[in-house]
Image (tube, rainbow, N blue to C red; front, side):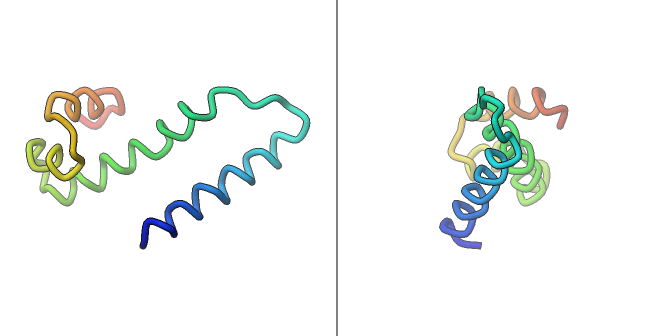
Amino acid sequence: MSKESIQEVVHKSLEEYFNDLGEQQASNIYDMVVLTVEKPILEVVMHRADGNQSHAAQMLGINRNTLRKKLQEHGLL
């Protein structure tokens, strides 16, 4: 899947989200999207790294301690 494909999926999902809201006011969209995509990203990368947090952190381009914190926040540790 290319970067554009991921962007297209996010775009389509957000359009559907707004359509489903109807007249209701949207709020905290940024946090909602980040939390929604962050967990599967962590799951897939940890699987690809065979559970090695240092390797996964390197793949993600983040500090290992940051990765560990995010894994704990999502109940993945």
